[in-house]
Length: 236
Image (tube, rainbow, N blue to C red; front, top):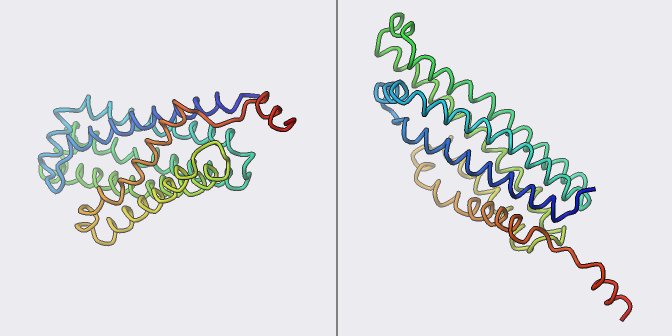
C-alpha cells in the first residue's frame, strides 16, 4: 500500500502538471482568438497553426492528467468518507469527458481555417465565420466543463476538512472556490458582459485555493503523526 505522504506528493505533482498544461492552452487560445473578429481569428489560426495544435495537445494532456489526479486523491482520501471520495472522482471524470469531447470544436476550427475546401465552398468570409462558430462553441463547451471543475472542489474541500491531513482553512477555501467557479459559469451564460467583468474576482478564491493545495501537497504532503511519538503520548 502506498504511504499517504507518497500519495499526496504524487497527487500534487499531477495537479501541478494539470495547472501548467491547462494554463498554457488557455494562453495560446487567448493569443490567437480575437473575440468577435472572425477574419482575424481565422487568419491567426492559419498563420499560427502549429502553436494552435500544441495548445490543443496541451489541453488534452491536462485533461488526461486531471483524471489521474482525481484518482490519486481518491486513493488518499477514500478512508475519510467513501461516498464523498467517489463523488469527487466522478465529477472529475465527467469534467474530463466534456473537456475532451469539446476539443473536437477546436480541431474543427483548425481544419476550416487551414483548409482551402471550405474557402472554395463558402467563400473567405463564410469560411472565417464557420471557423469562428467552432471557436465560440469550444469556449462555451469549456464553460460547461468548468461547472464540474467547480463542483469537484466541494467534496474535495469536505474531505480536506475531515481528513486531518491538511489545515481546515484550506478545505474551506476549496469549498469557496467551488462557488466561485459556479458563479463564473452561470453569470457568463446569463449576462455575458457582466460575467466577463466579474470573472477575475469570483475566480480568485478558486485559483488561490487550488494553488495553495498543490503547494501543500508538494511541500508538506500530509500531516501524519509519527508512530513512536503517538505511542509515547498514549503510554504517558
